[in-house]
Image (cartoon, rainbow over all chains, first blue to last red; front, top):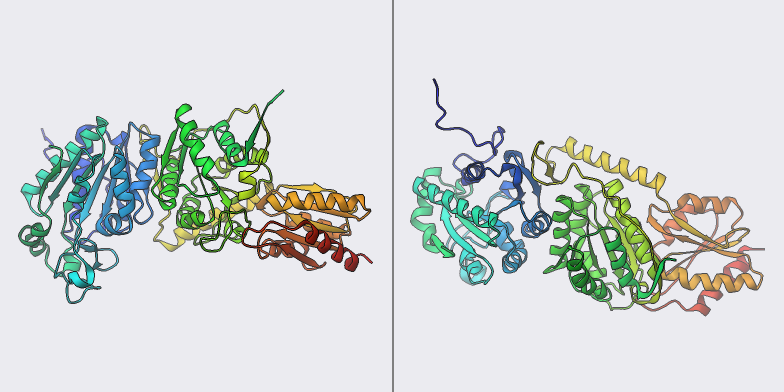
Length: 245
Length: 354
């Protein structure tokens, strides 16, 4: 007799993912889907795919999904959640989408306390368009639009979104985590689960920032890129829970 | 007897939306349409609906996108600069075939302009506005009554064709008060199998406008063009006013048709064979009716608009340059001058009718 000890979540499709080898997106996709399966809410979930590398998330997620215009995922999620207050609504976004072009929608959805969960992938650059400067690019970090590295006097400073969101009154749970090593992957899963459970209890707005490598644009191997997150990136973006318990 | 109420055009629009079963409204304040947003904030909660004051017109149109994707009967309203901000979202809505009603209570422009009534957004409304090959169904209310009636009609059409509907109104119609008859209407809202409702007992639904594979994107375009063709065949609406035996025809919509109507009426009493064609749908446009008028002996036309002359291009297309087409209009929110319009019609009449 055979026992299944490890399987693909029901909430994920069988399509091969287009992400670069070692990229954090596929890990986070899987964690979200594992949690949805564990909570048994696949048929009650509506996802929002952003513009950026994760735009094709609707091909990989095996539940209802809407694509959103660049930066507008939080506004689209607001519309969806207001029609279906009982569904689990997941807003999945990258740093250019969420913290640059969509900063207005992000802050105001958080400030209204919209009862959905934002999964924010911070890889410190615009991945899909080839590695340009993002609002989260770190001081000194080289990108295709900051060849000499980010300079505060030219480009300003990286924005810490989790800390920023945590200053607002309405959000109930705000955390930053990473998928750069196994321990933190498990932590990330438990944080996602906690956020989804709070949403299902109608507690309010939840926000999980996830530091994720972009080894292709960072010009590192996946192993080097994950090491970089744990040794360098966490200095600018400290891990932890900033609001809620 | 049906209930009648004295109300502004903007209020009538809210009545129409609620009667039509609209239960989701997302809007951002802008003059001269603020009565809609304010009244919605009161009335929506009363009927168990949702009102959200968005942080911008960009957010408002994307909330509309989300609510429509989720299967809700949804609308937003704005005025000219706000509608410009919405254009990206409108292109996405049209491509994803998401039903909704949008009202643009036009004001003077371009730029920040002013808060007076205007009709200078005709090109934007009827020729695209946003990027790509798409059209909206465009209705042109000419009274508070039609603000109500067209809102109801708009919801019927947007669900039927899965094409967003635009009410192209203006600050004068929005602000004027008239008696409005409240119809006894029960909306027939059909289930939307394509909507995002959670994939219980079915395969997942996806709402998207991204198709990286070119032939697939082409197929989406072909589908849209087929829908537009059907709309053009079935949904052209216009009003004929004193057109029988008319030799000179005024073409005017919305507020311009109100001014034109009284001049045409006066000139008829004086023995001039003039009439008016009032397009009610600006897309689809009554090109065929214009051609028929030429064939029935009309000698000249005047396009009357509160703009620099935009609809006149469609009038010329309709008459295929077989008769003279002239223009009378005012820009920047200035109202039409009755004497100037009368003189313009008479000048054309004397030249064209020998």
